[in-house]
Image 1: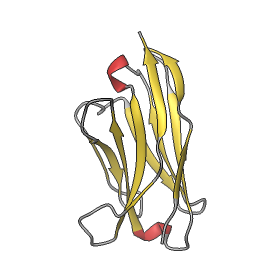
Image 2: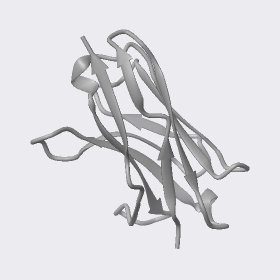
Image 3: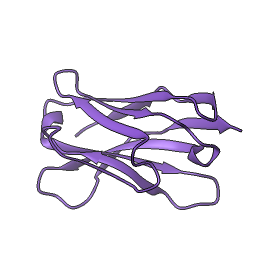
Length: 119
């Protein structure tokens, strides 16, 4: 069982930056691929980025590539999403999720943190 708690959301002007954190409970955090997703009102949840269990591999949605950076600190059981050059269309609730090593589905999800980018 893994519990995930996101933090770091807030209101920021376009062009600004925010850093989201996702703290995980459980001793096996380092065995999970960690992902970030977001959902805007009236839209489906969409993939943002993920990072492999070791941190050696990352992958980004085209919409955030070059602006967002995902990282993790397995010693602190925490994954981060650094968001730069924010745009109003980045406004959403951001969720972190955990996918077991070798699995193909994210099975644990946080409650989300709101990010609002004003124009």
